[in-house]
Amino acid sequence: MKNKSILMAVLVIAALAVAPLGSAFASEGTKTHQLTATIVSMDAKAHTITFTTDSGEQKTAPVMGKAISELKSVKAGEKVTLTCTDKATGEHEGVSDIHAVAAASAKK
Image (cartoon, rainbow, N blue to C red):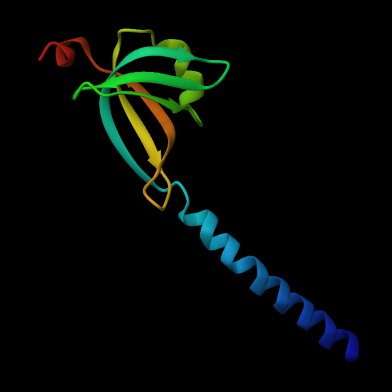
């Protein structure tokens, strides 16, 4: 009986210790926004992309997730839609998706 009580106490303590971590990880990186930009350069080795926004601002951002493999299919000067993932704090985390803008849309 004593062993069962000790085991239950250990399990409860472990569950309480891990619970805050789980909620922190669940909320991280869940916010996204999209922007249209023109690619200036890409660094597939460093997983970064430099782009100019429609307002003229030039930024370099880390590329993450499936966007890493999409770096191979885009080139400098191309107009793209970037999906950017944000941290729960609102800070920019990185580019998580890249899509070329259709030629007809780019001319507008």
